[in-house]
Every structure is written in structure tokens, then in C-alpha cells.
Image (cartoon, rainbow over the protein chains, first blue to last red):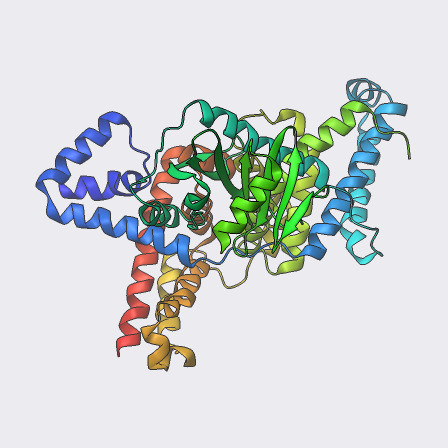
Length: 279
Length: 189
């Protein structure tokens, strides 16, 4: 492989981790003998980071989010009505074979679209209660991970010290704050960066004590407010008893991240550990 | 309104859990495709309603954000393209000309030495360079570098072969680099 071939056909895919194993071997072999192309690869990766760091990703304004949830409510209700009182779609298709009827249907669909897109000028209904399923889903992510990692936790991020782990999280554009529970007898066991099934990045930071452990799970969770059903609150850290676990839920100030601490500790000991760590 | 059936409720709950966490990503991407917040809002709303209607086609456990982006770009191609951002270049040549013109139109904030020393001074330049990219290059770059999607997912979203994703990314980065160099050179003068 020569430099022109590397730059034209391999460089971007190399920086994006998109080369096949065979191409990757070829590319690495070329880079071992070519300082110039190695610098180009560094440059390509730096450009990727520059974009990631400097492109503003504006969050959807709350008012728009409310309108959207309302429209979704209406769409769900319409779907329910149709499935309750109308023939199935394939029957409709069989019945409405003639072009003139299709035209009518298209017109109705167009009117429906106009209706949906003009809805934002109409008065608001109160926002739908979306927090319950979201809360359960978020909490379930945290406790499932806790159970898994209590059996076996293997860090996949540099975890030599809290500072090293924090820097590694920050490089992955995840919150870098590391709790210090050592005064309560829990020591940092390490950190992991994974992805949730829907593709969201998630970090797991695990703290081990003599008999118990604490897992800190962080991921982006939109703009939802703190879930209802709290047992106690402390400066924005909200505690819950949930399915036999003690949880501490915190909405982080930047980036729409939530932090969920999960443990089998009794709730009062969990609150105390957080209190001491915040001191 | 009729009583909600169990399956309807389950669908709604699953949709909220899988799809709604990606609203910000959809909105931020829509803002880069159409003219302003209102059009972006309409595009996202159409996308989400369509996604809800076809949610049975989504495979749980796969990347929901990538699936939603595919619907967003389909919706954009099929009805919103006429509302796309006016300042976007249509070709690489137009992009070069635009960047050259922009690099001479100095932003007063950038003449301030303190602002120049600050890393944040780069931010508007990155934004300007990205905004000036022809749409097909900008979309590919946004999906790969900002939304962190892989080439296969981007290929589905943009309805183009994986090889085309690869070449668009490569050319988009070359254009970005050229624009940023141009801006930096002008700053130093």
C-alpha cells in the first residue's frame, strides 16, 4: 500500500473504526513505516473530536416536546379507535381497490397531516404522564447492571485511580465526576463504558465494600423531571426504595445525563454514604 | 375516547422507553437540515408519529436512534427538502467560494485578542464550516462524527451504499479541513 492509496481509500474509515480486519492489518503495516500517514491519521481523529466537541447539539425546547407528546397521544388514541371499530388494514386494502377511493383516502391523509401540523397553534392540554414507564425503565437498567456486576465486575476503562478514570470518561464525552465513598468503606473497583440496547452510551462505576457494593450508572435521559415516589431528597439527590434496592437519582447539571446509584444497603445507610461523600 | 387496550398501552410504553430518549438528537439533526426551529419541530413531529405508526417494524435490541434517523431523513427527503437551509452550498465548488468569502468577512468577536486565545473562538468557525457544506456531505458527517453512527447505519439513513458513505465522509472532512485552515489563516492576518 502506498500513501495515496492509504489516504484516499483507508484514512477516514480507519479513523472511524470501519476497516475490515484484513484492511486494518494492511493499514497498520503501512503506518508502521510511514510517519506522514500516521500524522494524517492523528489529524483525522483530531478533526473528529473537534466536531464532536464544538458542534452545538441543541436540546428540544420543552414546549415543543409537550406538543409532540400531545400529538403522540392523539395518534395512539386514533390507532386504538381504528383497531376497535374498523376492519383490519388488509381488509380495507381489498375493499378499496378502485383508484377513485384511493384518491379520497390520500386527501383524508393529507388533511390529517395538516391537522397534526397545525395543532401547535391550538391551546395546550396538560402534558401526558410519561414519567412512570421512563422511571421504571431507567431504574431497571441500574438494578439489572448492579446484579450483574455484583457477581463479576471487569473494568473496560483505565481505572488506576479516580483521576485516571474521570479523565477517561471525559474523553468519551461522559460525565467525569467520581464519587468518593471511601469514608463509608466503599472503594473504587473501576469503570466501564458500554451501550444500552437503544445505542445510548452508559458508564458504570463500581464501588466495593466488605459486605455490600454501590454501582453508579450514568446515561442521557432527555429532559424528564425527577421521577415521583421518592423516599427522601438531599440537595438534588433523590432517594428511592425500589424493588428491594436503595437508589439515589440525580439529574446532572449538563448534557441531560442522569446518575443512578444502586445498592442493597438500607436506605438510611445509602443516604448517609452520599451525605458523607458530598461533604 | 375508548379504553386503552393492553397491547396499545404496551406499545406506547415501549415507544416511550425506546424512542423518546432520542428526541434531542432528532431535533438537533433536524435543525441542521431545515430553516428554523418551527420547521425542525414539524420534521421531528412527523418523524416521531411515523415511527410510532411503524413501530412494529423496529427490532428491539437494535439501535433505535439509527432507526429513527432513517425515518427522519426519509421524511426530510420526501417533503421538507424544499425548506432546507438556504445558506447551504450545492456543490464542492460553491462551498470553496463561500468559505473564501466568509473568511474575509471578519466577525468582530474574532478580532478580539482575548477571544482568539480562547478555544471557544474555534466554535463558530466549526459551525460555519459545517453549515456551508453541501447537504449530502454535512448529513453524513453529522451522523458519523456527532451522532456516532456506523457506516452501515448511515447508509440506511441516507439511502446510499456504504461505499458512498465512506467517500462522502472522506471528502466532507477534506472540505472541513480546508475551511478551518482558511479561517485560521485569515485570523492570523
